[in-house]
Length: 142
Image (cartoon, rainbow, N blue to C red; front, top):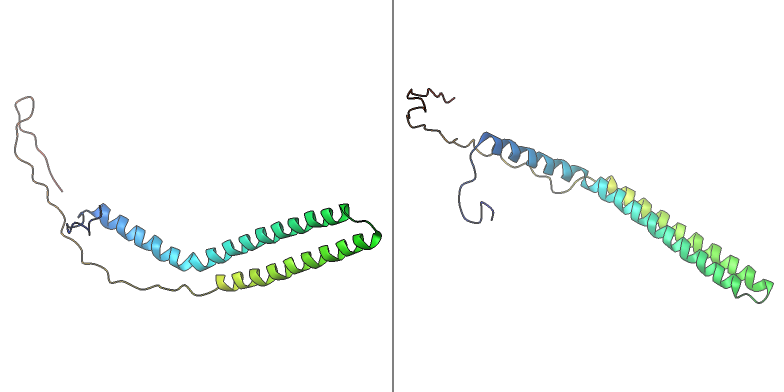
């Protein structure tokens, strides 16, 4: 359950404030780099798809050559293979270029939020008590 859901106050400690600032900073950095990493990921997917389509064209070429009955069928299979491979790489180059152009886009959605007021910190109160050997323990709290 989150703190906002049950309307309770968030923890008040210096460590909480430091971690909150750290995660906010990580979020801002991820917003800045997100278009770049999306573009690189899209580039990798396009290369993988081009490789898969090239492999499929190679298998189809082998199938056509195996079922060829005359030399004209073999030439037709080679022409068809190179047309398919050329189309695959032409499409891949266009998509990769678009992905790399998107990788250089400005990050969207960055807004500067106001810094919240510093919270009051908890205080520690120690009750006086006697030590195990009959003498009072002296404790100092910063």
